Every structure is written in structure tokens, then in C-alpha cells.
Length: 204
Ligand code: URA
Image 1 (tube, protein in one colour):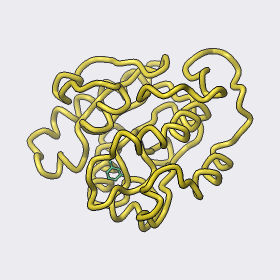
Image 2 (spheres, rainbow, N blue to C red):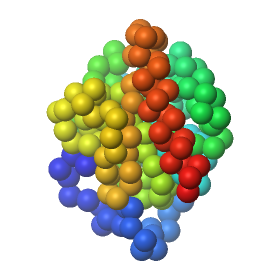
Image 3 (cartoon, rainbow, N blue to C red):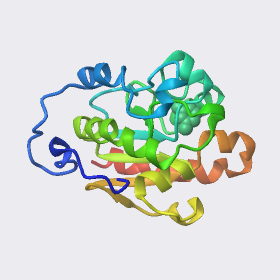
Image 4 (spheres, protein in one colour):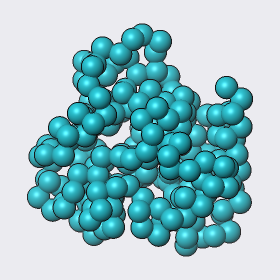
């Protein structure tokens, strides 16, 4: 992602090859917790690494930590996170079954969009994290996560409703829960997106 040279031991994402990296998620999280690769290190309170089941088949990826997440050190714990929990329950999933992370691990000041250099620096953690997780599917939450991970300028509307690929992992795109809080009329479409994921998850 993001036009950076892949880190050597992360090149096997989505292949059948045995992972070369022996690092665990906990070890990677520990390393990331002191990261100073970009200037967000000067303003963040916490490095928000990710949460959930390390063996999850399905990984949800949001944009970046917000204020609540920065304080708590966990992704999606504010109002948007509560809606995400309800969306998960609608497809009979909960946080213990899935894994949740963001495209970057530190809160941008005033919740602005992540800058390209921040995304590129954080890719060091992002790629290794997904390489350890080896999910069967990824769901990207919102335009920023979708455009960042899929390296495209396409609109969210045009990216929804079809499968994409991230290093061999099937990817689906849906609305960000924060957007759904502002535009509840779109919840039905988001539910349809999640149903597609749920169906594929349960059919093997
Ligand atoms: N929005 C995101 O994209 N990620 C979070 O963790 C919280 C809010």
C-alpha cells in the first residue's frame, strides 16, 4: 500500500507460504507503542494498535483514532464504535470474534485526515500486523480507509458493492459508522454490505 517498498518479512501477505516473521501481535504492538516515525508522535496520547481476536477471519479497518480512542488506546470506543458494535450484532458478530484496527495508529490533531507521509510511515506496522493476522476478509470503513488501503481516488459509492483485493485478501468497502450517525438513511446499504461479508464468512 501507498507506494512504499514492502518490508521484507511482510511480502507473503495472502499467500499460502508459511509466515517468515515469528513476531506475535503482542510483540508488534509493544514495538509500535513507542513509535516516533512521524510527527503524530508529538501530539498523540496513545498508540492505538488494534483490538480483537488475533485469529479473526474478518478484520475491520477504520481511518484513524479519534479523541476517545487516543485516550483509551483502543479503536472505535466512541459513538461511532458503539454503532459499529450494533452493526456487528446485526450480523451476529461481536468484537471477540473479529479484529479492529485503523490505517494509522495515532490521532491526527483535530481529527483531520491522515497525511500521506503519516500513512506511509505507519505502513511499517500496518503491513506486519495484517501479515500476522492473515485474515480471510477485510472490511474497510469509510472513504479515507478505502482510498488509502486500495490506493485509489475513487468515491466510496463507486467502491461499494464489489470485491477488491489487498495482497490476495478479499476486501469489501462500506460506510464509516461516524458517517452513518450523520446519515442514518444509509444504514440499510451498510447492512447489505455486512450481509455479503457475513455470508462469505459463514460459507467457508
Ligand atoms: N474512527 C475511526 O476511523 N477509527 C477509530 O478508531 C475511531 C473513529
